[in-house]
Image (cartoon, rainbow, N blue to C red; front, side):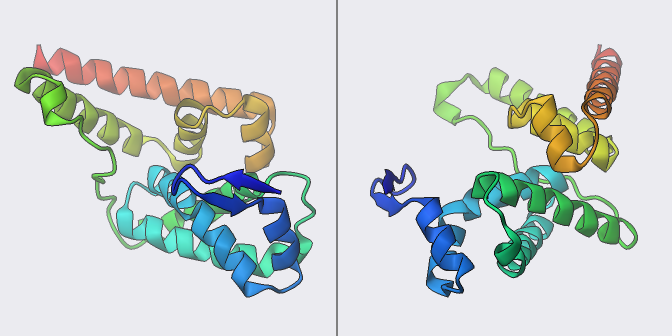
Amino acid sequence: MCIRDRTHGGVRPDDGDLLIRARSGDRAAFSDLVRIHQDEVYTLALRLTADRELAADVTQEAFVRAWRALPKFRGDAKFSTWMHRIVVNVSWTQRQRQSKHLADPIDESFTEPAAESISPERAAESVAIQSRLRAALQSLALPVRTVVVLKDVYGWSHGEIAEHLGITVPAAKVRLHRGRKQLRTQLWSAVQVDV
């Protein structure tokens, strides 16, 4: 079975077919899976780590781990969902290693709106708001930030988050509530300072 490849406008093999071949040791099939999912994996890594270089390292390590663990992949979930779990785990590990050695840089991962689509005043406000949001998001503890990103950016359900992070649904809800509350407090404080 083939599905339409939205990124290239062509037709690509279904993940299921590629997975079957990759699980039997076909490196070319796994390379195709990497090509198909690399942007999605990198984007999630970038949102979790807030560092382009670290996100690239996480992406590479996640695919290495996936290749090694592929024979154990049961196929209960989609390949992309399985990769998300690996990316979350690798991101946590890499961020913990990095936090022992470096301060957190604020990333430039959020794209600015096209200049011609908004007025200069609105563009300046947007840049200021994005900067505050990035800083506030970075201040969250990694377990809390991960839940906020997975829920508010990727739209995962509480059940999906709990399953993929190995926590309970109530724990996912508590982390999300704490994260949103901390973001609201920090962003409101920033607004009060500016007024």
